[in-house]
Image (cartoon, rainbow, N blue to C red; front, side, top):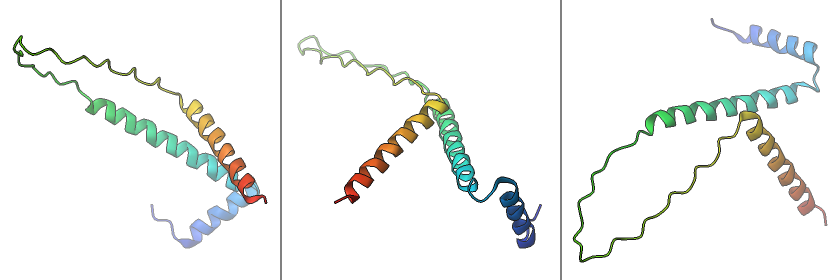
Length: 106
C-alpha cells in the first residue's frame, strides 16, 4: 500500500478535524510513550531468551591455599509493569522540568 502526499495530507486534515489541534500533541506523545514501552518490553523478552545458564566445571584447588570468599549475587530488581514504568518516567520528567524552571529564575 503506497501512500502519496495527497493521501497523507488528507489523513492529517481528518485527524485535525476529529481531535482538534490542541489534543494532537498529547495524542502523539502518548503513542510515542506506548511505543517506547512496547519496544523495551519486547527487547527484554529477547534478552531473557538469550540468557541461558551455562555450566562451568571448576578445577579443584589444592588444600594449601585458602578458598576465596564467596560473593553473594545481588537480588534481581523486581520487574515493573508498563504502567508503573510510565508513571515513574512521568514523575522524573516533572522533577526535571521543575528543576529546569527553577534554574531559569534569577
